Every structure is written in structure tokens, then in C-alpha cells.
Length: 249
Image (cartoon, rainbow, N blue to C red; front, side, top):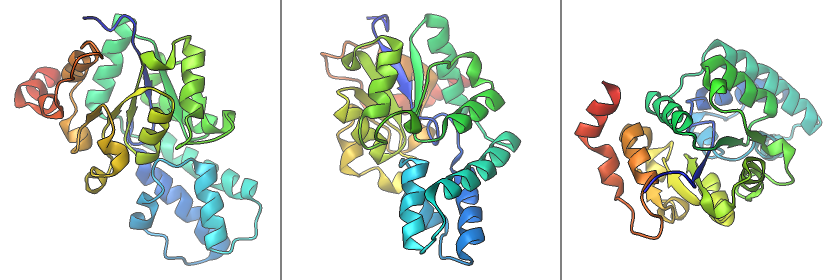
């Protein structure tokens, strides 16, 4: 079975690249500038992983009593984030290999993210992934962000592929919920291992509880090539030592 009729839609932050530390720092800068010292720490930040930047700042602005318009918060956070992102945004090595192999085999791909369009483009350009990923959808381009399905449905529309033929790769529970709502298959790679038992992840077609530590490009390609009408290879098969060695050689 080939991947001929399959399209892949990637979340960006925490799935293709480890950008969450940059988002935390950018958000902290904004909150500190507008609200002074706050209790916004890394642990609190992880509660917003997978939610769009606009939605996150809307909640935090209200929580910390910030009177500045939401657009001001967005602009400040995006400026800080772009500065940090351009300086350093690491790509997960096996994800880069996976994207490159999908590109060579002609599998349609898109990025659907809660980040701003400018942030998506900056990260992809800075990492070189823009050579392979050219169909991009930001939550700011659709009516509703994750966990609603809008970004994924728009990505499928732009690819010209039916939602049922799409497979979403996601690291956050809101994204996994959005994929399910869009009628797409989902591969869940939790950014935080402690959240792997979230019902949204448990309902995914494939769950890698250890996230990126369990992911290999070769095994992911093999999984995609299976007939979706048949039971899929269990997650443990994506984490074998043999696959790790083969994919990194």
C-alpha cells in the first residue's frame, strides 16, 4: 500500500520545531511589560500549548487585568517571538527527515498552526523547511482556532484533498481534538509526556506517549502506507531501536 492518496498536515510548534520556549519567553515579556511581575511561569505556560496566540493572550490579558487592547498584546508578543525565533528555533531531526521523505515521494503537505502567518513563515524560512512546506494556514486566517477544526479544513481545501484522506501530526490536545472534528486521522506526539493520557490523545489513531523521543521518519512512513481500513501498527513499533538507528544513519 502506498501513500499516493494521503496528505499530511503538520502542526508547527512542538510538532515540527521546539518553539515553545520562545513562545513562553515572548509571552512573559509582554505580561511583564504591561502587568509587572506575575506568576506566569513555564508550568502555567504549558496549559496553553496548542491554543492559538490570540486566544491565549485574550485569556491572560483578562486574568492579569491588562487594559491594553488585545491587538497591542498580540503585536508585542509577535515582535518578541519573531526576534527569538529568528535567533534560534530547533527542528526535531526525525521530523525534518520525515518531511524530506514525504516531499521526495510527492505526498501533499501543509502546515496548520495557531501561530501568526508571520511567525510561521519566519520559522520555516529560518529552519529551511520552507523548501518543502509551502501550503500554510494560520489561525488568524480562519474563523476559529483549535480545538475547532477550521485550520485543518482550510489546509485540506488548499491542498485539494478530502479531509478523510488527511493525517494530522499534533503535539497538543486541542490540536488532536481539532483533527478529530475535521474528520481526519491523527498522530499524537504529546509535547508534555504527563499529558499523554488526555482523552483527546487517547482517541488519536496513533499515540506516541513519549512524543518526539518515540518518533522515527522511517516508521512513520511505514505507518502512513498501511491501509486505513485495517488496524494500524501499534505505537511501540515506531520506537524500536532498529528504526532509530536506521533513520539516523
